[in-house]
Length: 107
Image 1: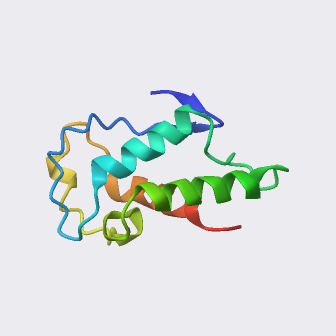
Image 2: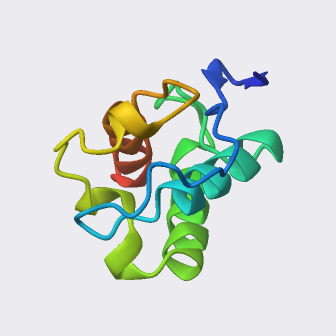
Image 3: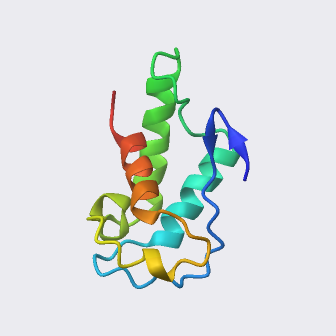
């Protein structure tokens, strides 16, 4: 697990055992986008008072909305937990979707 700016990447292997999501969320796609943004330094820092936080958050949100179709976005996760027992990595998928959603909110 790579750590950058205090946030870990999500250990998803894109096996897609969690799919299909009953609510249409592209779980591996959301995680892949998040991990790429994390590893490339595009994610906003966890410290919201950082001088470049708003700019980085806006850039992340713009890239995310361009990359992930609206019907497959993390905010469609309703925490039904249908995916949890299917994940061989034991990722708390709804929790991770919540992290992504929180990064998309303007502060």
